[in-house]
Amino acid sequence: MAWVWTDVFNHPFWALSTLIFGLVLRLHRRGPWDPRACRVQLKGKTAVVTGANTGIGKFIALDFARRGARVILACRSEARGRAALQEIQKLSGNANVHLRLVDTSSLASVRAFAEGVLREEKELHILVNNAGASGLPREITSDGLEVSFATNHVGPFLLTNLLLDLLKRSAPARIVNVSSVNHWRGKVDFSHFKGENLSYGMDSVYNHTKLHNIICTNELARRLQGTGVAANSVHPGVVMTEVMRHYNILIRFLFKLIGIFFFKSSEEGAVSSIYCAVAEETEGITGKYFDSDCSLVLPAPLARDQAVAVKDFEFCERLTSKL
Ligand SMILES: NC(=O)c1ccc[n+]([C@@H]2O[C@H](COP(=O)([O-])OP(=O)(O)OC[C@H]3O[C@@H](n4cnc5c(N)ncnc54)[C@H](OP(=O)(O)O)[C@@H]3O)[C@@H](O)[C@H]2O)c1
Ligand SMILES: *C1O[C@H](CO)[C@@H](O)[C@H](O)[C@H]1NC(C)=O
Ligand SMILES: *[C@@H]1O[C@H](CO)[C@@H](O)[C@H](O)[C@H]1NC(C)=O
Ligand SMILES: *[C@@H]1O[C@H](CO)[C@@H](O)[C@H](O)[C@H]1NC(C)=O
Image (tube, rainbow, N blue to C red):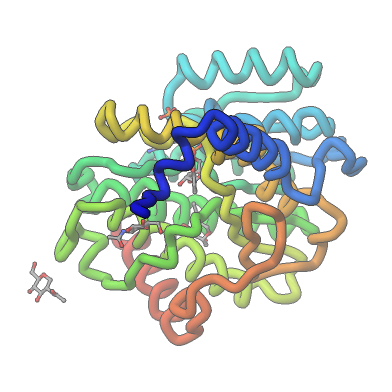
């Protein structure tokens, strides 16, 4: 008897069961940690969240605002940033939320942003490097960097380093870097930073940048031992944000369709970052990588290689000091 697995779906019973199974999965994919049940308050604390105008970053910033923090939304678009600012102030009832502009792909913009923060903030307790982009077309920035590397890694690297003394003075402080499970497929090749030897298919450039995030976070954590500043990376999950905006309409449609059942909402995608930034359970943890369900997991072997990390961190330091 010829039988194909797709026959299953021709039967109404199985079609219905599959649908119900999908919905049950949807309801069960919440992580074990619930930010709403976490009582930690952030009154008197200051937090910076990059890319806070939409997606995961907006819900991270909203959570901090609800806990009473002074929150700085670090966004590149004045209009999009202002809309998020108003929404976050309204939903949280916290007026101490502010907008500052930064384009993480430009080192000059990162420096100007950091100067503003250093001038106006006496303390900084939480820095979330969330801004990032996937699927950007090839471009070399005015700093001579490949644009995805500049946006996702070099800009945030410089930003973190410029704010480091302030974070140390404000200790205990926490740095959270939003990376991705995609880092497993990334490679380390320093010629990539200037756009050499890169191929643009299948997210490969994005994958490399997310690997550098974890490597440098871990090296930074080693350098910060004993300072009271923790630095960790997280995977937010596969989240239905605007992250696919640079892809074609068919891919975006498929992402949305599959996402209805299997992917996280932006609010759910923010959970692992919030866990890492505020939870009592993560106090004192540094140089680690958290999965989207808030569990501590090992990143790819390359991300744990200390010799690679030292080289990578020093390379990025030289790069950002020269540009
Ligand atoms: N969604 C997922 O499935 C997923 C999975 C793994 C990791 N992540 C990571 O999660 C983080 C947040 O992504 P998302 O999914 O929330 O995506 P999103 O909805 O596209 O939001 C990205 C945010 O980053 C900002 N941004 C992009 N380029 C920037 C630049 N050059 N300067 C300043 N801000 C910039 C965007 O600002 P504009 O709105 O002004 O462009 C936006 O606020 C990223 O680091 C991403 O790599 C996402
Ligand atoms: C995270 O922090 C490290 C260390 O400063 C940095 O290299 C990396 O680019 C940061 N940003 C992101 C988005 O991971
Ligand atoms: C990278 O590109 C440069 C020139 O752009 C070339 O000389 C070099 O051999 C390439 N390296 C690799 C590993 O392909
Ligand atoms: C990038 O990572 C994603 C997710 O792991 C994977 O599907 C894709 O094939 C990777 N791209 C390359 C070129 O390795």
